[in-house]
Length: 101
Image (cartoon, rainbow, N blue to C red):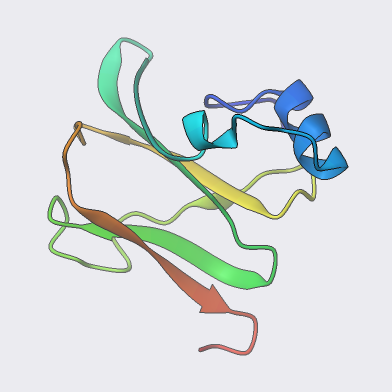
């Protein structure tokens, strides 16, 4: 799958090589516009997860409300864009391990 957020194929190359020194600008929560709509792109490295979602004050901390998708490049990075979520929103990643925990 092609990039759908701030992470490019070159970012993934550097990430895998262990020489990306600016990931803090591209991962986590990055406010942006997509298709003319303001929101936030979320990404997290969770290579052993079976599911990852974003929970926060914007969705009642509901772990089923905003699931992320794994990138199609086997990097272990999960990502997704949430429209309407702006700078300053409180959030956490909910990570479900492969053994269901």
